[in-house]
Image (cartoon, rainbow, N blue to C red):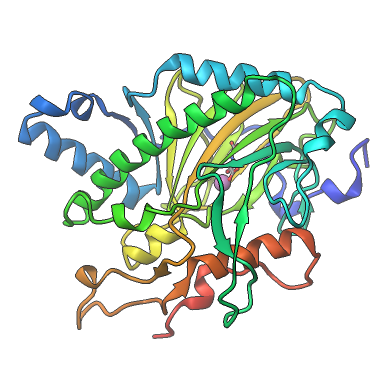
Length: 352
Ligand code: OGA
Ligand code: NI
């Protein structure tokens, strides 16, 4: 069975293929028209909106260049993250995530009950982040999530906070384009993120002796609104192509961000845009680093199809659900091995 602990081994049908399709990849979109917001022509802007709309519809994924996030910020978080993960396990576990502190370090995450070949460090954007205290529907008690910052590297905290602010700025710009692509006012989504529960994950995927049996992160959909992923030049992210269900490898593009629509946009748009499955492969030689930013609304947001996008011919496809309770359900299942499937948005689907 090789050297990998059985907990990491994927069922045969979910194992990665070592030779992969690089075919027609996810669309690459140049955001320079919105960088200089003052003098963008209406035609240029509409062109960009159409590209974003088409990418959301056809792929649920796209890459952006000329996004306005300084390269220096990205290099800094990459450097600090390498320093943090290079420490001993004992050192890293000093900021270990636990049932009370959901942010911090951990190396035992499971996706669909198979262990992921990775270690991570999570931090939230809002400090503290206000959330529901439990997953129980009737419990109205709130609690705070606070970040745990390591001693080393000493500038990690400041770098992460600065990077987080850049991600929030980019996320609002992207949500404006997505809103326009759905025929909505640009700021239609802004209000949902006032007390956001967004977080950033520093991912470290160490080399794996049996990359054909394990995955860095198993197949999943992102539960939030939008994800903005930075990755290094190693590559490994695979996206399930909507047209034929094949896993397609995303080729790393220097200084690009990979954007994907999460479950919340799927519900808001009443399935016009779908949250697409993805996973990350590992390899036997190189370690890999990636940094997803998960743009999530306030805990008190009721997620349901937008009224503007539904009517008698196209009725709402989902019942409303509470984002805070949804999140708590997910967090809870991370800790307790509940012998049930994770809560998913299709559980809120209205049967036709
Ligand atoms: C995730 C994710 C992909 C990657 O953390 O949700 O999909 O390439 N990561 O790290
Ligand atoms: Ni993901």
